Image (cartoon, rainbow, N blue to C red; front, side):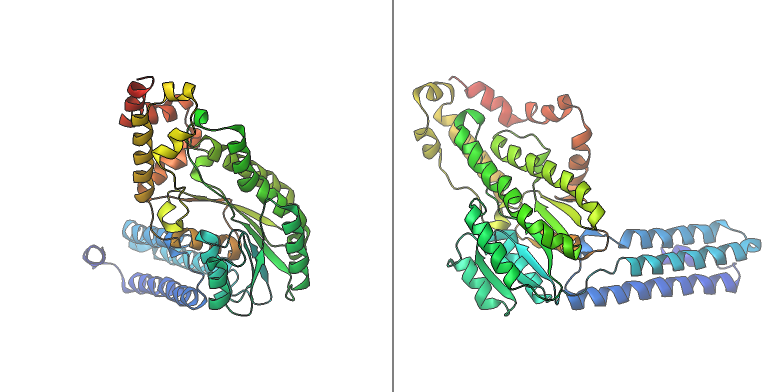
Length: 396
């Protein structure tokens, strides 16, 4: 690109050439300054490209305009350079959010393992006072947070399905708040499971929603006034299955779709108070979180009554288990993409409403999926070999 630039611009006047390199130098300085600041604070979200694209766009426009404008338009080009450099500088300063969390507190649910565990450690290193809610406050995950964290790391017993745990957690948080109060609540606690609707009971759906949906509501309501007072953030960890209809994920999808509806309504209400609400939508991070539901084909078969055993044979059950396990082991093996998105949602001045966290290959499909008619999204399964094998095996 640089070779092309030199070859096509040898005849241009030296003033425009000097201005071009000045523009490159200034934008380069902005990038270097931003990189070192993010490296120092640990708040980088470079993987998401939240600020790089506009700056690269400005450089591209200037390169094109330089080659298209004739010599008599030197002052026009000079004006474009000044405007874009000022715009880039304004963008850089506008994107500067919280560089550290000293004096601010964050409550995170589900810190025994997975996303919550990693986020708690990261925020502690950034200076936040972290209230890490754990299902087992004496378990290995909670003890790891205490041993590796600073004195700002506060581990507390928090089962999101129990009102008494939530009430005790609020009392503890209020008694240990730093000077700037409770800045954010990250509703991360959740469980995952799979199975066709006929394999499940109403209690299975209820258990899933009691943790993934009502657990978040149970935590949100009592802590909302504290977050509102600090004009802070509310985060909700959802899933791509909140909008993507998938075989065997009915109960999980119900809980996550309800969670997003709650978060969307809350975002509208809290906007008047300066509180920002974001939804995290992870894709396949089963390997990274190590919270895959462990059950064998025999476990599923043993729970069937005679009527279901006539419909779903053991070969199909085994095939479904193998397919699910294969899918889970093919996903992301670390949490960095999710943790970076959470940090952006917590620290950026203008966080995104939703953070879709999937591979680049899947991102295009998942972006357009909510807008496609059902006949197209359903055909994704109808055309799969798994669906055809299932149809043949049923009743056999």
